[in-house]
Length: 320
Ligand code: BEZ
Ligand code: FE
Image 1: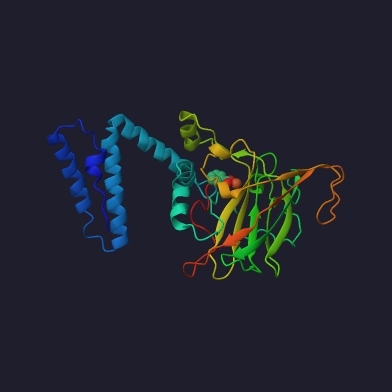
Image 2: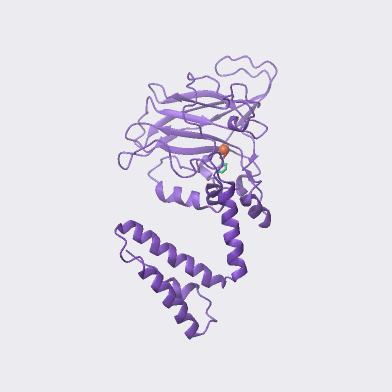
């Protein structure tokens, strides 16, 4: 195991040699306290955590008042967290830690589609829709035709891939945020024999992450916006292939370069082509005089590294 020497690079170089020795001696004693940890992975995690935390404290020369403010902040994050709201994951998302974890665990593989943050609004057991069906189910917004294929990295179509999709309505709310128990803006389908899929959704629009708690206060203090770039979530799974958790984003959206959770990747930005009222729809659906849009998302799944225990990515699985 490689252990970076953080003591020399991150402590205040103006501290006297004697002071630095005192700080390093304390760090070493704490690291040594984990020497007997039976699980070697737990030992590695604890030792590295301590080294990095001490490096942070030493680098910024943390005052005792700042230490207290940090404790108060984390306490507030804990207090607002319950089974419906996971402020710690929101904190991880807004600090880019979720995306970094996703990057580490979803290494680029050939031309496999890139993953991004899961978000808090997935619901297991969303209704199945026919290919070409409408996930909107009454969610307000402009109709949007979405189509594409699911292939593996050899270019072979993947029939029967499960495709879960979910999105906010045009007012920026997911159905789980409605005051009633309606299901809208979500569903799942299976790719056909040729790996093709298609469905009606609504054109994605921007919305803020929950920002009425400590994470929102942190964003305000940093002059950062809570807004997420417009997106449509996908989770795609098939036997022996790596489950893909991702979204597609709308080309031209002005929030693409300042998504509050750092979820945007260039390869996931798609054209959502506006269609004038009266433009014939791909499936003959009559939209009256409403405008609509269409997009294409061709999905490539990497091989599964090993048998995956679950189709749900644990990172950011229930925040909000
Ligand atoms: C979302 O995609 O809805 C989301 C992702 C991360 C944090 C909050 C919301
Ligand atoms: Fe979302």
